[in-house]
Image (tube, rainbow, N blue to C red; front, side):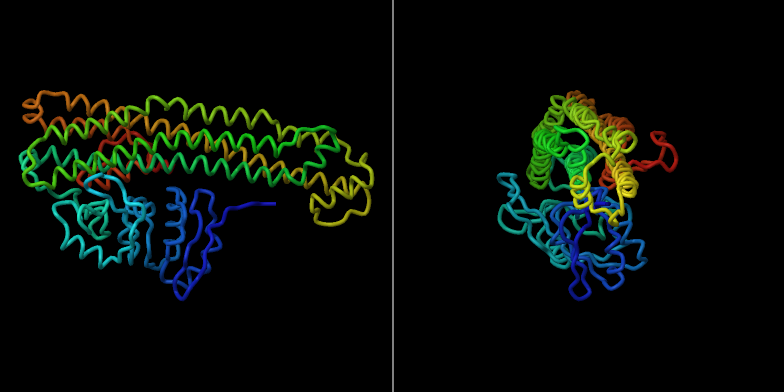
Length: 466
């Protein structure tokens, strides 16, 4: 009576095609034997991926002690996978689905386009102007060379700009660019956290409904007019989906504004004659204002978890099952009712008499109760994940406030003391990084900064994978 959300797969030649959803609740056990037969893993049919799901898939594949070639990485998988330390040394890469945006509107094109590693290298070598990689007039790849090419993941990001202002303010312009890239990445991970928590809570409700579906008859037999727990769970799920979508949309709006501001800054930086630093700093200020808008709904994220928990616990389903196990005398049921239960409960064997039926029935209910309590305990962990998401967004808000203080400084003072200003800000950022996603994203863009130095924010060996 166990339910798992397995990632689906099929094999063609020496390639394993993954299909469906890679999530925190995905089981990769069925893939292991098949990986022995394969040399390539194709991601073109993956519809959705979560950070923890991808981390666990990476651990599963690495446990095979063989080097695989990854094919057709989707944009989301590419963005997440490149943050994992040393990933470029664990795999070979064949092709990527890459997003494209219009440099005039800053809007993303409707569909990503597939490029082989060789084609991507050629584009980076022959069609890049500064940090923009052009594919057609007004169309560029959404990413810089050291984000897209695996062999350059460890290189500084970005390496340089073409504009006169950026050359005159090299350290400052590089810092702002790296920080904006980090902010975009951190915002993408925040959207993933929101998606993952809602999807996993949905999944748990579905599992609970599957567990309770065969028990509805015994609920009604023991207490005529008993509430329909499945119907109540459906109501909770519909409410959760609606509230979750509202919050996800708000976080995505912040991400989209940060993406556009980052694209705008890259465009300014790659114009040789550009010398109006106010427009770059104005885009950074715009991104800060977008991030500060999260103050309007941070409390809603925490409230979502609390109200979901209250709705779920108010049903008292475990207590109802415990009463059936300890207090209710199932032998009082008539022959017809027992026959119905035997059919709906799918008992392992047909009992010879009411006494034997009561014994089998009690064990069935106890197993259902154990699994139900496991699902509820999983919900509690996910509630904590929602609170962690609130903390992560709160930290981005604090960073935005610090940045605005820097932008409001006298320009001469800022120019004269830039290195100290940057160093002080980096110290503050490091204290605000609480999850592995944030730390990996920061290290990916600030390759020259040692996050472990003077890091007392976590106990040795402690990991936060949310």
